[in-house]
Amino acid sequence: MKIILFIALLLSSVLHAEIIGVSQLFNVQTISPTLEENAHQSQQFLGYSVIDESRVVDVAPRFGGFVEVLYADRHFKKVKKGEPLVKVYSPEVLRAKEEYINSYHYNSTRSAKAMVNSARQKLHLLGVNDSEIKTIAKKREADYYTTIVSPIDGYVFMKNVNRGSAFKTGTKLFEIVNLDVIWIEAKIYTSHISQIKNFINFNVKLDGILKPISATAEKLFERVNPNEATATLRLRVENRDNSIFPGLYAKIEARTEVDTFLTLPRSAVMRKNNQFYVFKAGEYEGEYEPSILEVKPLNGKKYIVLSGLEKDEKVVNNALFLMDSDAQINGLYE
Image (cartoon, rainbow, N blue to C red; front, top):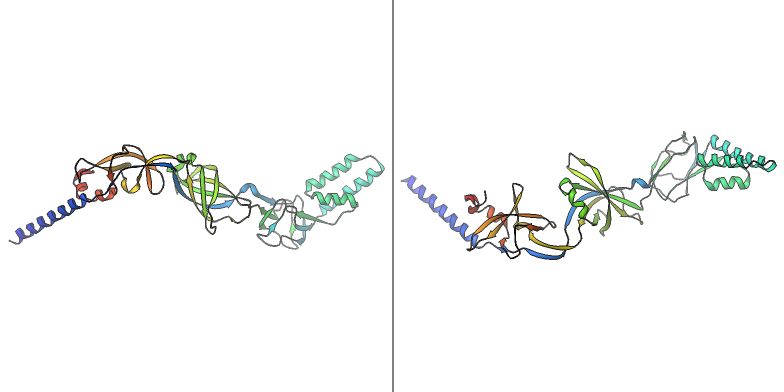
């Protein structure tokens, strides 16, 4: 008697669930694809700001010596092109200055222009700045000390000497970095690499920078990180006010040229076994049939319909609803 009662209760609950399912199916919302004009495809990427490698200059003298006065005395100090970085004493440079002066004296009694030019060229090759060479020629006297100046506008990103330091020929004393242009390195998933050539506008939002910044694509690196399955896209950003620093986290939105697309919301499309499906409304109310279609992303909310659906056809707005329904379980979508 208990078994019969249990079976009866079980059948009753199943029938009740089916009635609820049918009721829900009749309340399913359907939509038609939308023809969007003047729309563009967009894709989101992540990245970070880095130094433009072509705007980095090492200050490494072609002579050895000793630091007498250190002007660039701290990291990240801003310097102008031609601004003094350090005053040094170098026996080698001092000898070259004296040779230059002697060549002038010799040329005053005999014609020895080649000797003068050779002595001047030696100072150039040692890295003595032009203004100091002109002063030597004018005064006919050599300063014991030589001033090393900044080759570019920028910031002292690396300082390798202190007051009183000794250095050898070729020692890297400073690294000067110009930040007028910054690179943004965006991480691109390999599935998106083929689409990169279609993107023409890049808007970058950086941490700490309120306004989005326009960038231009410069290079897609010919290397993929196997651990992340990502490639690197380099973007160029003008940074004349030097408000962007290296190392800032970036969100990048890439856009194509505007076009006209037939679109569906992502909620209406379901992916299974590497294929995309929608549920088309049938002839009778509550009748829906899964149909394969070809799509590609328009943005984070919509797909572009490439084939498999006409403009006047209706599909279920929420494909996952039907996936979880009894109709799905019973074989409509297997």
